[in-house]
Image 1 (cartoon, one colour):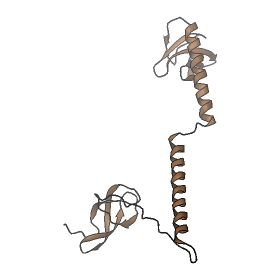
Image 2 (tube, one colour; image 1 turned 135 degrees about the vertical axis):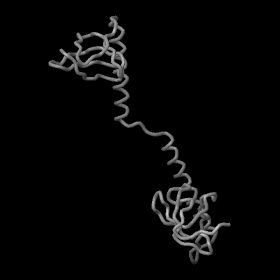
Image 3 (cartoon, one colour; image 1 turned 90 degrees about the horizontal axis):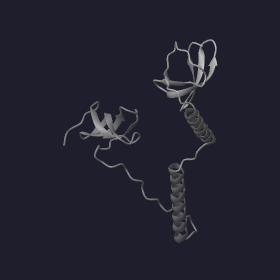
Image 4 (cartoon, rainbow, N blue to C red; image 1 turned 90 degrees about the vertical axis):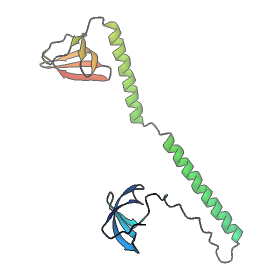
Length: 178
């Protein structure tokens, strides 16, 4: 068994981080650290060896009020513990199956509509795509091959130097010579 000194940097299980991290020994008793400070989160807590498992919750103490039966107090405690377990299970179920918000639904619907619109436009146009160039000129309803967005269809020219192109992920406004 080694001897520790105050100010020494050691590995310990942090009660706040819930992980084994570097700690500074704050207080020692008989060569063993008593208090340590986590270098990651800054919390000061009792020393827990790195190989030790995290502490488990203590069993619930049954309190019997004066004039009441012990059996009734035990039953009430058991019911309360079961209610807490049910609440924890419900919370876990809610986390397991996240809800889809209206904004996410609308975003998904727009993405599907855009994908359908892009597919219809690509089916109608049979010409070969032209590589995109900021100094290029593109007629409406022509195909453009962009290095990042892929193949797209020119929807609208916006003079003097913009063009709207429908790509698979949406309409992008890019620079061009009109």
